[in-house]
Image (cartoon, rainbow, N blue to C red):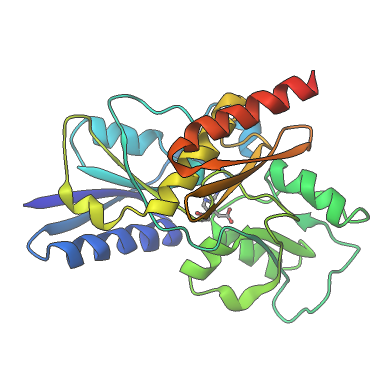
Length: 287
Ligand SMILES: NCc1[nH]cc(CCC(=O)O)c1CC(=O)O
């Protein structure tokens, strides 16, 4: 059997797809794996922040098309880049074990302190809202591009720091660049941050994907995504959600677009309902 894996072409996306390929290979070494990389709209438009480009799923559209047209068999995504609504023709077949979900502060190479005369580079409204509370005196300016591009802009002196996902930095072997971790309470992560999602075509069944799928990753992805979906937040909305599994209990913390926070807990078997209930409760409180 041969399996073609569709991925964005950034170093991080390829590294993540290789993690999935390794798990599949360990599960069944007889499966022939081929990585097919492509640029997505989100990779091509680099001069604007993505909420200005509009439209959801800027990092997935081309991969969805390749999957629908049969040019690839599965696609690998950062869960947090996926739109909250999924095309019934392209179900999410597995969520991985979660890498560190926290956001992190990265300083320019050689620096040990924030330069107050330069902005913190961050293109996500979710991060910007929470940064304002953590660093009330610092300016925030947008930065785009893949992780390597952003780090280059940082090191060239355009920013005092960047806020990036620890997960991406760790997977790229760049953990050493992290100057400060924000706890998930200080900065609630994006829904699905640190989790990989595997997408397939409806009707296809790949038993090897069991090797990629993780119980806690799945519970958190489902609950966090349900929360954001119910609040009507896309992948570029400032809405944040973070789940923690403790035995059979899920503790889910959410933030709405006004920066209000709330928390719910309940059985892991009701992950999506907990996300929806928390969102409904926060909507009502905001009215
Ligand atoms: N939006 C870009 C993106 N998508 C996934 C990650 C990191 C990996 C992850 O969170 O799973 C990143 C980079 C970042 O936010 O720093």
